[in-house]
Length: 265
Image (cartoon, rainbow, N blue to C red):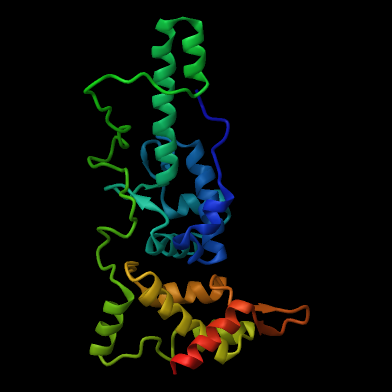
C-alpha cells in the first residue's frame, strides 16, 4: 500500500549540523527531493523507471535549471546530507530506514493473524513484528541496478574519498603555500554583496575553525572552503543579525565569540 505521507521531525531537521551547514537554497532543494523520493520506487530513492534521476530531471521537478541543480546537489553531497548507491542514485537514509521498519511491521501484522483478529489488528497498527529465534532478517533490497548495500553507516563522512579534518586540510594548504581562505574566494564577494562587515567575516572564520578543531575534530569534508561559505551564507553559527534598517549587529553568541577571540589573541 502506498504511503500517504512521511514522518518529519522539525527538531531533527534543525539540529542536523551537516544539513544546517548547507545554504538555504540547498536545504530547500533537499526538502523537495525528499518529497520526490516519497513518490518513487524503491521508496526513498530518486529514480525514474528504475534508473537514477539526473540533475536535469530533478531540476524540472523543482523549477531549477540543470546547472543550479548540479551546484546545490554537489553542496548536499559535500556536506554528507544525501547518499548515493553504486550507480549514483540519490537516496534518503532516513526514508530507507523508515520504509524498512514499516515493511517489518507489516510483516508482523500478517504473522499476527495466526493469533486471531486481535493479533492481526495490532500488527497492522504498527505493533512489534513476530520474531523468529536465531533468524536475523536482512534489510530491504537495493535498487535493481545497484549491487551494493545502500544503508549508510551512522557517520555519513565515513568512506568518502578526499574527506579530511579541518586540521589536516589546513596543514596541506599551508604546505602548498596557499592561504586557507584566499583573497579570490567567493565568500568575500558574497559578504560585499550583502553588506556584511569584514570584521564579522573574520570573526566567523575564527569561530568556524574553533568549532571544528576543538568541538568537532572528527568532522571531515572534501571542501572546507565551501563549507565555510555555506556557514557564512546561512549564518548557522548565529553570530549576527540584521536590524529593520538592514544594518548588521552581533548577537549574544557573536559577542561571546568575539570576546573569546580577543582573549585567545
